[in-house]
Image (tube, rainbow, N blue to C red; front, side, top):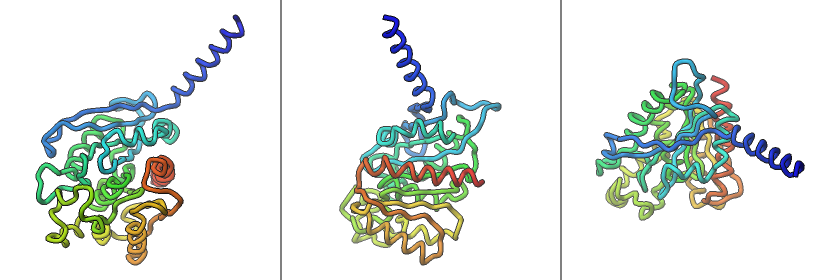
Length: 277
């Protein structure tokens, strides 16, 4: 009996130890004036961190954008290691809801699609006002998967005053080869009648607007991913523009297995960026 009690005690101590090193994960709902609706986000913080006070330690923030058809919970379920990473690397992760197919820009034809404004003008100020963040571009990064990879690069380039680093994993960085997919026409109109507009809203076009070292950039994609060709094209364009960036191709497809692994490399990249500032 004593042996059994000891075994149970050890098990409970181990379990409590595991819980102690996992960060805090919360789902929060706020009202958005730009989206004209309530919207949720997941925030993952180091252990025992809640809403900020003036005396507590402050942390850099990484915004994680989900893919088409996903929502605010996609990253926390795809990469459950984020809770431990928040503790290990002392950073905060924020996972917004980008709608089913917003592509994270402000649509020129649909006033309900204003996710650029929501994230940059509402969500970031809310996070900085209510949580223990280092509220500056050198302590703020953004990345995402698939549609979110496009969104992260698009937003970071357009708002380099807010973001010091940006990434994309399996990103739809140029969606022109897919004119019938993912409801993009709902936000930009039919491709054939709006080719110039479509190009203007791609990451391929946006990178022409930045200078070298304006952003720390990391891009990765699996070699069996249908977005592989457009990621290679973006890499080549960045080389032509002489914009420094990290670019990774490795085995993998457009799936959760790849994203669960790839996000660790991206977060390490951001961690090194934050450490150098």
